[in-house]
Image 1 (cartoon, one colour):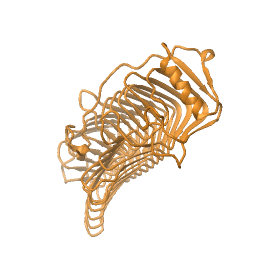
Image 2 (cartoon, rainbow, N blue to C red):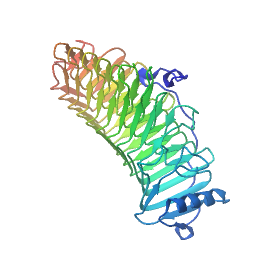
Image 3 (cartoon, rainbow, N blue to C red):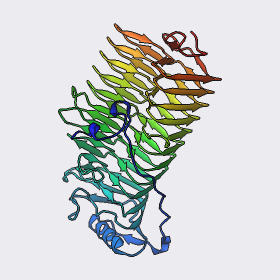
Length: 430
């Protein structure tokens, strides 16, 4: 069964997947630092410490050896899809600059899993090299290259890097797949990948992180992650940095250099807002820069941001993102509002984005919308739509359908024109 057919409203083409439970966040772990269990620089010792902590009645803190690299060479015997034992209790891991990694010669497995009973707090650590083989939350497909969390998860000063979720069914969450309440602070998700390798229509979703439970993310970087699908399969690649299928608050972040690639299919966005109302995604003080959605002979939309459900943005910069679809259709270099999208953007900048479709159709260099868009105090400038031997229009804003309201918003110096169709965007002229 393919991922895009499994009962999620709206369809993957518009990033309309329905998700997730909303639950309270876990309390801080009970043990003070003086009660922490010191874990020597040994992967076997770390596994043993987790088993002991799981068996204890209360919360436990494990203190790793400073700057140690815990090298995982084989999967956990009890749960071979993971490198370490499942976190079934309440455990805090004080990383102290340590790295937990799967060595390249090891079999495929993710690093950590948190079932519904578990609560994991991880700080000052790097988690790398995971290569997931299953998806605990669905029982099919692959998700959570580094961490798959159904229970509560908190990451503070953590680097999640060089992890992979790869499948010929569906694949999600190259770095983290979070179904429970999740808090991320001052962390980095980089060079994680989601790969759909099937021969029929499928999906690759959430290169850095995918949340199906409530997420709060602060001062975190999502950089150079990717989602990709097999060429010519008509598949969906979206959310190269993050896909939010549930309530999400993103503050003071950086989403940069991420790539969604779907040759002959559908590519969408570095940030995909897909949390159905009454939930929404709120993004403040964040830079979305230099991301790419690419779909030769297909449909690329929202090089930076795509929303088919409620999205609120304030004090954001959406700049130098690209949607590219040679011989296809490219929409919205910066921001795409889908047919069910409801976007409120304030005091922000949409600048230098582009759509390009040689021998195809390019529309909405800055913004393309088929839903509801309200912009107040926004500068939409120097965006471009280009299509050599094709059709290019709406360098600033292209209205497919829906409603647009501009308040104290300037749309100027876009190429080849500011807004299209002519007269469709009140307050915008060339």
